[in-house]
Amino acid sequence: MSIQLIPHQGLRVAEPEYLPLKAYQSGGFYWDGEAQKVIRSILGDFLPPLVQAWPAGQRTGLFQLFAGSQEVLCQSRPASPRNPIPARQLQLLSRCLEDFKRKADSPETTPNNRHIIQQFKLPDFDRDPELYRVSGGFWNRRLHVLWGCERAAESSLPSAAALAKLPSTGAFNIPKQYLRWLAALLALVLLLLLLWWLWSSLHHDVSANQAVPAPVTTAAKPAFSPPAPNSPPGNPGINDARPEPKTGQAVSPPPDNPSPGAPLPAASPNPLPARDGQQNRSVASATPPTAPQPGTPNPSATGLEIDKLGQQLLPDGKVKVQLAVRDPSGSGKTPKVTYWTVDGVTQTGADKMTFELATGTYAIKVYAESPPGNPVVLSAKLKVTEHQEPDVQLDPLK
Image (tube, rainbow, N blue to C red; front, side):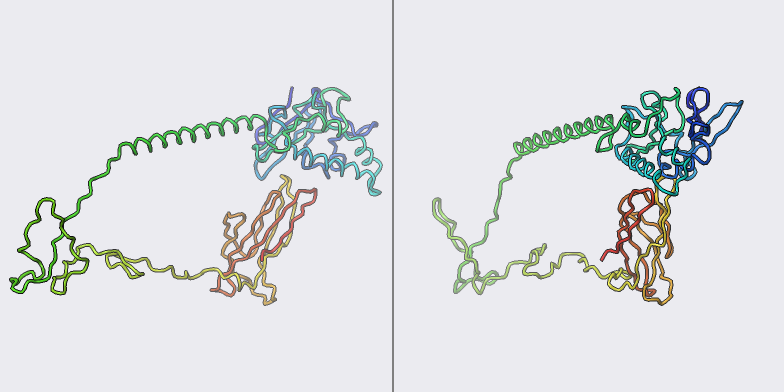
């Protein structure tokens, strides 16, 4: 029987196909309670816990790893060149193994525990590749080792030799098949952009060739002349008796400014655009200037600060961080907090909030009122670093 997948519970290995490793020459196994506690005290991020059982007199081990209510190992796949282990995970496992080896030199380590640490071994990937599992998407892949057992007796290797055989993704943490898909997608996008550019250029040339300029016509203007002494009433200034010009005879253009006796031209039904900053009277409505909105946060009058109350490393590798908004003046008043944002994601809450965060740097903002009716915004940078013990740094942003 190979590795048995039990839905929603984990992965099970059993004798006689998988032989448990002995922790001591005289007896005892890695899977036993005390030995398991020593090993997982430092390697627990990569070596999941297990529960032993002896159905029909054969030893079995059920590996389980829960993230909330979801069992993770059931969704994992064996590591392989097509499903490689992230290089970052191998680096972290190597650091944990170095810390594990140094624990043997501690005066607080008992002789039995020191022997377990010094003789600790991992499965040989060439013989038992299915014991190395990878879970998660390509952006958050995790390594899990089904440890403390082997198919062939004495086939397990010292930790450094075992790590050297594991397939890795390289520095960019992206499997080769994903890189091939990404390259194909990029080539397709470039082809579509080229086709769009060719179509746009062709369409522009055809439109330019088909465009015909429309003829421009101008209306004739009446010629103005000084009013005749005996001109009839009606339109003074227009010489009605002016003869038509003969063929080839030049006609002088009308003067720019009519004579004092000439009538004013009729008003155009469409007013001209406004000039010299004057308002255009034909506009139906004008957009009023933006008025200050009530409730605009005033960062200069905060009187508050964000404080870190505590932190805790979770089994899934995340860190639980508790933050709070407090008044450093010692007034004793509880600030009125409207909501929090973590990297732009809004969460409603009170003056104390708990977040479960992976390693990385986060932008924290708190929208509150101090005093009531005076909105303020608090900003800080939260940095969570990877280590056996969580390291959370909170830096206020000025």
